[in-house]
Image (cartoon, rainbow, N blue to C red):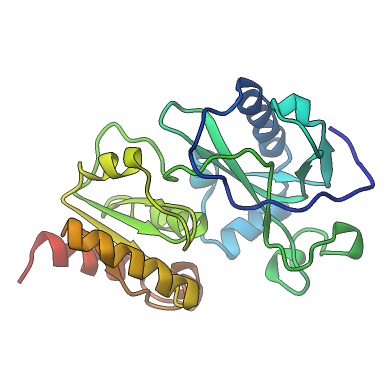
Length: 264
C-alpha cells in the first residue's frame, strides 16, 4: 500500500451480493482492518467516546480502527483489476458476513467543518471529495451489519447506519439485538430475510429525512408481507443525534420493545 497522485472515483456503498468475493479481497481486507485497529489513537478514541457514545469494549467488538493517511493500493492485492483501491484516511468500520469474513469496509472521512476534524487532522484540499462522507475499497458486498450471537433476544432493531447500530449495542444490548442493513437505499437479500425469521419482531428505524422516508416505504411493503417487520419513527434525526442531545435512548428502545412484546 502506498500513496498515488491520482484520486479514483470514490465508492462508499457496498455492491449488492451478486457473486463470491475473491479470496484475495477477504485476505487483504483483514490485513487492512488489523492495520487500522493498531492505529487507533487516544484522540480517535475520544471521538468515539464523546461523539458516538461508544466504549472500548464496543470499539473492540466491532473491530473499529483508524487509517491515518490516504492510501492507493494495487487492485491485484484485492483480486481485482482496473483503478487503484482507494483507502482514505478516517475511521474504519468493517462489516463481516455470516462466515466471519470481511464483506465490506466503510471509512468515515473528516469533512470540512464536521466534528471529526476536531479529533484528527481536518479535511484539506489534498484529501479531495469534500462531499463524500464514506469511502472504502471497491468490491465490498452488503451484508446485515451485526455481531454474531450464540443466543438472541426476541426483538431485533435495525437502524439506517452502522453508528446507530453500535450505539444501540453499547447502551441497549440487554433490551434488543441491534444491527443495520447499511443505508436508506439498502435492501434485504434472501439470506437476510431468512435470518429475520428467528425474531418475534423486527423494528426498523430510518433517519428523519427524505432518504429515510424512502426506506420506510420499503419496510412498509415488507410489513404487508410479514407483520413482524415494522417501521418506526426516529426520536430525532437519528439515534446518535438523540443521544447527543441528552435523549434517554434506553427508555426509547425499551418502550418500542415492550410495545411489540406486550401489545395492549
